[in-house]
Length: 335
Image 1 (spheres, helix red, strand yellow):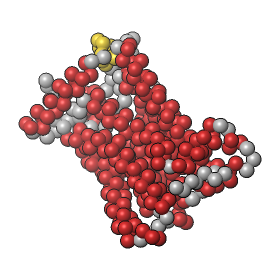
Image 2 (cartoon, one colour; image 1 turned 45 degrees about the vertical axis):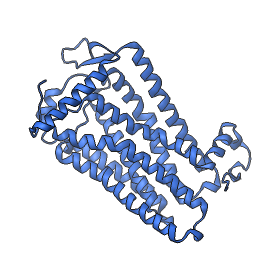
Image 3 (cartoon, one colour; image 1 turned 90 degrees about the vertical axis):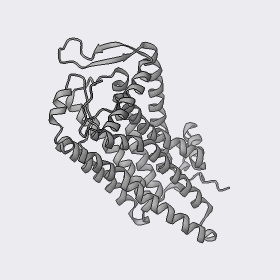
Image 4 (cartoon, helix red, strand yellow; image 1 turned 135 degrees about the vertical axis):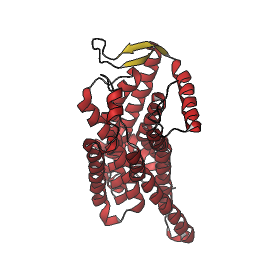
């Protein structure tokens, strides 16, 4: 198999070749013959199409994921906004995080579903750039919020929320629309350009900078803070409320889920820039969706670990929040 690498290395080439073979074999299952994204155009991309049964299964999976993401995070937002007992600085950040997760389900997942299942981008270059920027923006918002939750001060919750959205917007839209991430890749992008493609690439420099700024540095800061919190709790057990321990544990699980879901993508993105962008498309798609699944996972975590979420869910589904003075209902049950 012909290969293009930026830095030729025999062992690395063998590894990439092996990845192609493995994922090529996996993706053969459920695929029919190659088809054009736009049959009426000579400039159309050619892509392997899933057969009908596989498409139906993938649509059911992705639509279910979207519904849980949208409804679950909507319930989190309504709960925190409506019930007065939940009005505290940490929950302001949790509400804002739920908003970013809900937007992933509303604005990112639907178009990514079409691209993954059909192997084509049908919405033009301008919307490709907008979608990619919004995707990166919401990922950055999430990690900045988690860092703020770990570091927040009571009087600064709303400031941190605004700063997280603003910094994520400047970083994501500024980087992609300035095209700094593809400097030096112009010839390569031109060589793979076709009607129906939507490429989201980083040159070697920005693959590292993006990973450090938007993932590894914030995660390191939160990990160090978490270790410090554990030490403080072990020294002051009698002074810290049981509910605070439980909240800290739950937020730690949320952070762990974020790292688990997004680390494969960021690591692969860095490696890909140094192996000539030879990572199999199926692998990249899988890691993208694992990252999206983090937005689905957060409300599920709240349902398992927050008693208030279960009570709020019951009150919302049964429309009891429409009753007068429902905002003062006791939703915090301490065991």
